Length: 272
Image (cartoon, rainbow, N blue to C red; front, side, top):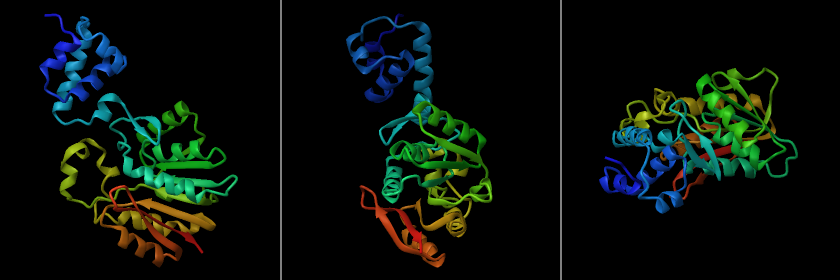
């Protein structure tokens, strides 16, 4: 039987918006086209591809991975299962970074654990004079990040390695930012929702959720220029602990920023 957009919508199985998004992706057409041509016969290959994606979505696979993209800070980023899916919460970290760079003509910026490159690329696009370097321990993630930088026209340098070990010995920065793995080992959320399909090494440090945050704080003073700042995203209940790490490492002006839900989501400070 010939399938149409209307027939697939009527068959259901997924929310209507998700059906339209998957069909638009398969057919490479807009939502307006789907509405205007909802009774037009679809090619069998297109129907088969849609049904394949719809089945994966019913199994819980994230829409971002099925579509291969996610919007962040007004830019569309390519995403694959090699990287975390950019989330609106992380835009707070980018906003903090942009604010920290105000008044700097050519600031040096380091993004540790860049993943899709969403943070580094967004900062580079917002601050064209910045010299942005991004690292990740995953070569597959860096491939995604580099592709995003090229496609969006952002000047970002990439290095592969674990935290500061990825950097040349003489590099120092005016700003370090990071959204590291901060979920504790065994946290029930790791087995729920989109997190089930995202790279576990980018979600959990395999310990108490503070190990990566502590390593970044400990290494930052040696990599920051005088007056340089460090800002990190962390879990909903970790702000006090992260502020303690920063203060113990000699940072001044230690503070936490709240997201739209009122949760302390980002913390940082500056080298005195």
